[in-house]
Figure 1 (cartoon, helix red, strand yellow):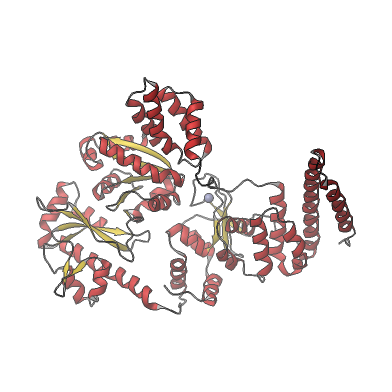
Figure 2: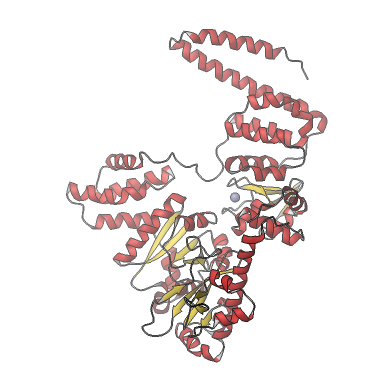
Amino acid sequence: MGRIPEDTLQAVRDRADIVGLVGRHVSLKKAGRSYKGLCPFHHEKTPSFIVTPERGTWHCFGCGEGGNAFAFLMRQENLTFPEAVRSLAAELGIEIPETDGGERGVLEGVLRANGLAHEYYQRALFAEEGSGARAYLTGRGLSDADARRLGLGFAPDRWEGVAEALRRARVPAELAERAGVVRARTGGGHYDLLRGRLVFPIQDARGRVIGFGGRALAEGQDPKYLNTPESPVFRKREAFYGLPQALEPIRSRDRAIVVEGYFDQIALAQAGLGEAVATCGTALSAEHAKALSRRTRNVVLLFDGDEAGQRAMLRALEVMLPAGLRVRAAALPGGDPDDFLRKEGAEALRALVDGAPPALEVAIARAASRGCRTPWERADAVAAVVPLLALVPEPVERGEFARRLALAVGADPADVAAALRRERKGDEPEPAPAGPRRTSDEDRHYATLLRLLVDHGAALAHGGAELLALAPDAEWRALAEALLAAPDGTLAALVDALEGEGQRRLSALANEPRPDLEPPASAPRIFADELRWLAKRREEQERTAVKARIASGDAGALEELQAQLARRGAARSLPPH
Ligand SMILES: [Zn+2]
């Protein structure tokens, strides 16, 4: 995809109405110069989500997420940066000059081919030739109205059904092939991939059809499920069936349910569990887990209670735990969720999901059930679960499950903890926990300095060198450097240049609720006061460190102390403001 020129990016940023954009997803109330609402990215009861229109930024003081209009679209609609820019530009009527139209042309072409194929499959379901497929749906408890609402379709048992429909719509055969709905014949020409199958449309978060799943309708038709292949828009490792419809229920219930079958997802939604999504013919991947963790921390896995189902559940845990997800596991007593719903009813299915125990408890019970009478059996049971426990990023959570494991198998908790430590050794350093990191006094004072710089940039830039020297850590320093280098009024642009902690800190200080801006005249005084506070703190810390070295008999330390005192004298002689 071609690069988007900086002046176009700036035009989109300038014209984006951040309050209007966020307001589509979050109910916002005016509060002084800002707007307040409930954060769409974490569950909360009191609003800590702030939008500041004059800056074009937003920030959640609860979970630490923040950024500009692009960052909001990327989070909310699961878009990449270029997609977010294009989406907003299209809305604002800003044209993006294409430096390289090739790949973008392919993406759009594939999406168009998918859209036309979807229309063809839907028409076929409600035509004469779709009567068998409709009867099959009725047999599974789905009415014609359900089928229309779900966008279900039918691929007739013909070699050139969708191929011909796309040809007539003037879709180039290569695009139809890249979309995966047709295949090339060795002797030239193309034929339909899905034939004689019920068709499920697979959509992205924005509701665009990215691929199709096809279920066999005839006896002995193999395979039972056939999906269109990976394409420029269909990535199975991150696709979820039912995603666009599930987004709102996932947000409002702060929970996602993951199943394996399309009919299972439909059954759960029919039973009032709209937060369900299904994987598309692949095992749950790390990408799936990451996509879920952006929307909720709470996931329920529904799995078959038999041995194969349990093993699949444990494999899913291996990818979900590292993403920091809190996973519950509901075992179905034989059969799939769809069967269960028909036999036991919606009430029972909801009770099963709501009462699902933590998946790690299920893993512990499974290991303990193999016997733990002898020391060897206990060691085996612990060894079976410890690799999973080691994946839990949150230390308190990990420790608590380790104690439960010890209790369940009758082992000494200290021994289980030791096994867990050994398992984790050689791992990457602990990933940063979700949410804002704890702020120290230095962080707060430094944030005030940078906020002043944001508000009164040019007037304070002369303090730049001292500001950089007093940064509490490398990330603050990088942020200060970026702010000093940025001309006034390009804060929203700066957000795009930063990522991770830097972006969170910038959006936090850009959206900090405060009564009003300081009068410009007093800004330099406050700025100087804050710098002095930090300098004093720095000096105290250095002195304490040197004293500790003197006490431990370090010969060079005394000299350093003297040098420090000299520096302090020089600093004192700075002219007062
Ligand atoms: Zn939040």
